[in-house]
Length: 497
Image (tube, rainbow, N blue to C red; front, top):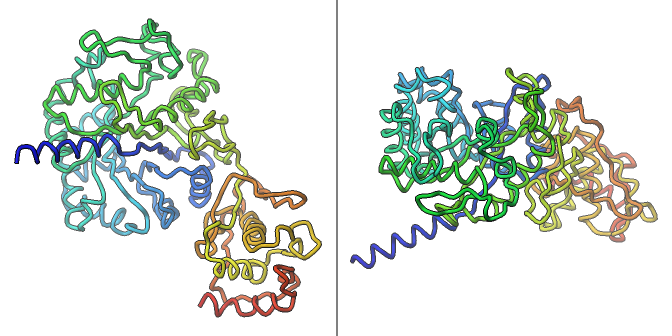
């Protein structure tokens, strides 16, 4: 029996260590021209971002994220914590309205109860654990507690004596909150959320931390930081902060709670007293961060254990109060332009394409040919796409197959409708990409504009009763005549109804 238990524990340990890490993004909304939710989702899909954290339960975003498969962390704003922490029914109402109403269409995987509460809203500390427990109880009542985890992000600043990491511990004044919190996380198989900012550690170190060490740049062996207690070498601040967090939990006798980093990043611009808030440093930090997380090496204290991380943040927030740097943590401007091009060659598909605003709608290679043909007929008929370039002898006739022809039609429709994610679905046979599908003399349409002026256009549904039999539907394909194509367009309602 003892051997069996040992083997089971080993299996659990190996499973935990081998879980794939992921990179997500935070989506703030302090923008003077916040993109429409469908535009936000289109950008996420184009950049292959599969994990996001929302700072509130924005209904528009939750609806736009439905049926995308993107994993969503929903946050309870700090200003709502007191009410939720003092009333079980308030917590239940919040969960019913913002979680149950959207799940499972929207793939909500976790709830963040506030953010940096202990450092930014210390008066909420006494009700913080109650708020978490009340929210969890509401999930239990809805039978969602296994699918959706509850936790809260803490700031790494509440960790004292953080280097060497092996002797770190939490600010003991917060133990009355942290001990029951960690008990809850352990009992519900949840994780501790950590906000870690090497940028601030670097700025406040008075030269003790080098810029290269903060930016994940390669260091000579004699330049690495060494934990005098364990003789473990650290090559970057990020790993040291994460391991300090593990040690601080161990100091309170909690050794099996995973850590995910809910915020980290580097500003690309700052005031005159912030000389290291630059485009180059922001690019270097985030590019190296993504590679570091995705290579599955873990940290020196926990090699091979995933440290999934959310980058702060998707957009520059020009309405953020505070120093200039507060407005410049984003990967993208509000119009979808990249702030800088991440250097991620060879690191997988996430954010690895040229991160420009040019996105395209293409037919899926593995789509059912009949569904693809039906969607193509719809686009060239009721969808009102000019498919004349697909006629025999025209620039986009070759290659003469349904995937290539559908890609032309889908992409034209997608751009005409303002590049909303809904405009690139076609009953599930199309997807958004940043790879230009143009080929030879066939140049596919590019964006109609980046100002979002078309975001509110309502795209005709594929089961619409509209019918348009103009010359747009006369294109040559696979030897079919224009008359046969027209007949198929007239019959599209039968296919989709």
